[in-house]
Image 1 (tube, rainbow, N blue to C red):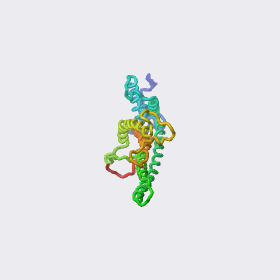
Image 2: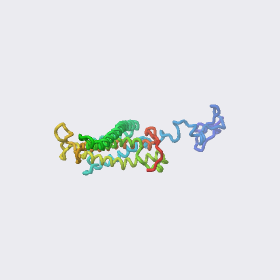
Image 3: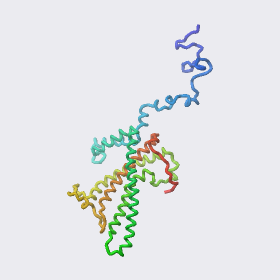
Image 4: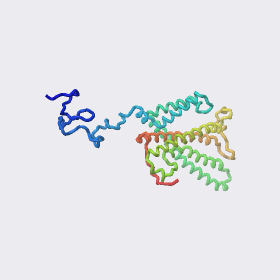
Length: 318
């Protein structure tokens, strides 16, 4: 009779150094000479995808959470911590005196950064606005051409006409239309990637390296500049539209009478185009936010949500 060891195996059954028996089989039966333990080189092919050695399911929960949260969410969370400290300590600076709606926006964005699908939909909503403003800028280009052509023609034909031609108004309308086209179309240019780059240095970078550069520059340099500029232009644009220095708006419904006027004779009011400085910078800023979201997706390894496309423009050196 074969002796049975305490582990439940027979003495003739082979055993690994770790103490566990190796079951040998041929065609479903247990036999000697063939092991079911996969070779090292075949692990990636024989193991099912759900049991891969480097599967994300086997990673610790904190690592999975880190890879699921958008990088900009971590930046906003750190900024929120600084704001809380500034509020508790007490300071006259803005970081300790944020309005309630800013707190709400920051908390909502941190919550949304843990849901890539929601953040992707938010980015697509921003880019729909960008596409609409790009279409407006395209038609404004034709308007700039027509107004400028009319200005040139009337400049040389006015001397032969005995009636006055509104040359001054047309001239101001031409440059205001061009300025409006530029301000309303800046965000579209950013989305399409037409901003100048040092392409012979940039083009050879991988997508992730490009994403890291854009993410850092946009988040820590570009976006703060836009926020600071918007705060400055907020009061500047309201005064241009007729608000008094005391903060009160003039009474009456004829608001165009309170717009800031041009110092030159026969010119259109400059109040509306000064207000468009603020509108254009805000549109520019939200498209920069969309670019930050896209680059963050690339950093996360979710290029399917980033809509990466290589430009068709030829290599140029700026």
